[in-house]
Image (cartoon, rainbow, N blue to C red; front, side, top):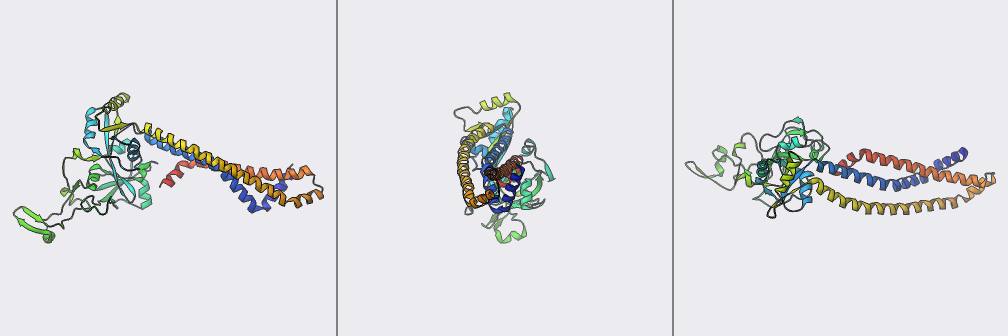
Length: 392
């Protein structure tokens, strides 16, 4: 038995290229269904964790999926905006603590999340260096952004314009980095956080002007009549907020009417959650309240149905690959006919030559299965890091 195994092993070592190719093909054939299944399970687990940690979301009536994806994962197009008064409405109900969200703009391809300091306590986000934002124009960045872009305290980020031809609309804002968050293995690691008022300034709802009383503004001052100053069109809006010009920034209109994309509602208990949800069941209600985990389960059900078709396709591909491997072994036996005849002339029994060939097949399949099992275990062990790496 062991002499047959030794001869089979030596043959496989001699035919290195053929052996490596066979092992690689069989390994991938076994691993692909298991690997895809492991990655999908890990993705679903991560999505559920984020959704389960967010009890309620309030937003304008429309797509619940867009509301959840934009508010929790900072993906997809922003939902239709609602007014800031919704925050006051939830607060006055005394059923939940409201946390405003305005997720509309991006910087260097990363989302800018306008919110309040309550968000950091809610998500248990901690500062690893620096401090929280305290004035307009300041931002706190996630650990992944800091690492990938090489940003340190005092660095600047410029918001991206939604439309480069909109000369009268949104102006880019230069934001100062004042804090870096600790890693949390969540979408927060890849986001830029600002006060919601800073997000409104990016949206063009607030701005500052040059002080025309300064000497260097003389070429922009058309007329001065007492305390009345008339400027030409070259007076610029600031794209950076600092200690000198912060006082000149102001908002046009009532801030209660300013937009939000969503409000996270954190109820005091299960009873408060039920009562708050009841407030949004009126037929005339323009806002909707959703439980993110329910919406996510519906989305995942669709994903899992798609996974079934993918796995079926992979299995069919595996069957075709297995048949191809069998064909390779069959052709190999034909090519080795002279070798087998020589073994018989040397006195090797017929069953012994078949035993050697069987060992060759078992060794190839065994090595392939071991490698596939190792890859599957590694995928399940490090699936979170793999998914995080691919997403970033």
